[in-house]
Amino acid sequence: MKDRLAQLKEVDDIQVPVENEAFMDDFFAQIEDIRTSIDKIDESVTEIKKLYSTILSAPTSDQSPEWLKTQDDVETLTNEIKKSANNARNKLKSIERQLESNTDERASADLRIRKSQHAILAKKFVEVMTKYNEAQMDFRDKSKGRIARQLEITGKKTTDEELEEMLEGGNSAVFSAGITESKINQQALNEIEARHKDIMRLESSIKELHDMFVDIAMLVENQGGMIDRIESNMDQSVGFVERAVADTKKAAKYQQEARRLNSFTVFNVLFCYYILSLLAFILFSIYILLFWYILIM
Image (cartoon, rainbow, N blue to C red; front, side):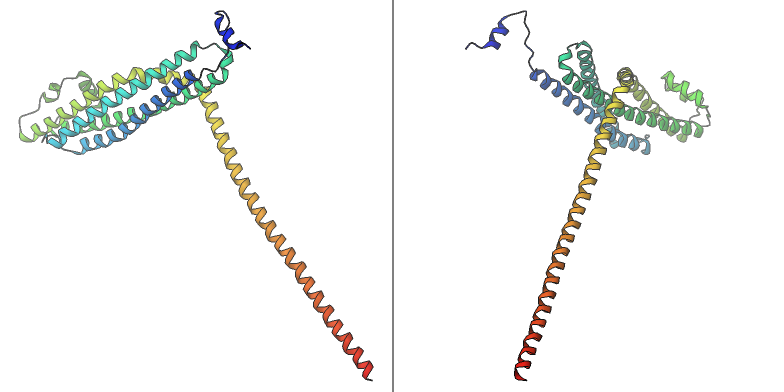
């Protein structure tokens, strides 16, 4: 018999519905790549927070090799985060376009899987980038606080608004205006300029990541209903598992109690049988004794 499937495939205008396993394999490979990038960002954020703390706690006027290395490490991690974020963002957007162009209702099961995976990772990406942004803003605020304190040491008091204007101007020279020449003031000025450079580098990084962050954040906002349903289903699944475990424990307890009850019942029956046998033996013995007593008499 001829292969009917082969005949159908030879006809151009007839499509045979087959499972596109290769496509799903490629999709899951993309998902794994995105997840790896997000995990790398998360690890890098943890490390960069430690480096931020080191920079804030170290004196900047000595420009020691250790301090300079810390600055280089921050720069390296910042670039790694940017690279991983770009990779995750581009792949998430690519999958989003694929999902929007998919109108094949026959693949609804696969489509739901892809949508849920995409939504979960998009939310996770926003969460880790929010964590990074919070670390950056915390470092910026503390660096700005150090600048304000050093300006106060030099006798130049500024309001928060004035300080923001100075920082946004991007010119370190504005901080030195009116500062008299002295050893103490020069050390303070070095501190101010170093912190200002930190903030300027930080501002550049924040601006570079801002657009991609907003882009994916809007996507997550639009998918809010889907993400809520996914989380609700996950919570229900956890609840089912917890109840199943509890029911299993109860069943085991009841079974154990039933075994103890059965053992107790068997023991009672055997004990009663033993007592009855003993009584029968005693009565039989008494009967024999009486019988011999009557014969002797």
